[in-house]
Length: 318
Image (tube, rainbow, N blue to C red):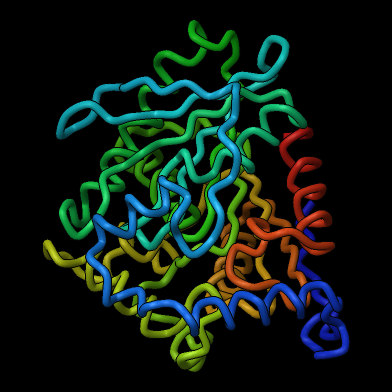
């Protein structure tokens, strides 16, 4: 059953929990006191994040995690695999965020370890190729290859063909694109659930992105524009449904949980995509959290606790 009815009260200022306000204020203050994101070479930013010298703390490394490689269209693709305590009940294919430019599977150990632990799923988190060194379509090509690898190898490797897919921010975009590629290029729909957190589904930029301005609450308008420019630096068009999945045909996709906060520049992307998903005949749930910043589930607080519990429930029942 789809659950897209929203109470307008979630958008009111007095609906924002006090701890969410404190988190947002701390993020804005920290980012305003840091060198501008675009003043630092991208390789240096990536290295700093993995050395726990980035803007936000690196989560503890999961003892469950091990790194392997799978075949990809341009060479081996690293994947970070986390196993649950017992036999996996299913497999969660995960794509990290970072504007197709930053981020890594390692930086998501807090979220992926939780899914392995709480949901009993094996997690395969993909270190897909990053722009601008490897612009579109390199990233989605790697994600497609990982999905096809899972379909082929998953039953023997993990003892199950129960598969879910998902990711945060750019990872949400890549999840939707991967589902559409498997349907259209390969005639298969092997995933039974999609966990989509604060994705960017229209790279032409939705109103909430265009109107956000320069407030550095994790992400702002300039950041999104720069990420899109880097991602598309090898050619292609933001009008292409393989780039902006909101513009594509969405029929035949799995039930999805869409999660977003009201203080996220990508708010409209989730609101629009969730409704388009349902209008295409797919089951969809929409969870909007008052005061949540971009991918707020990466930060501590009552909103995060609520959102992660709902994600757990969704992934425990697909």
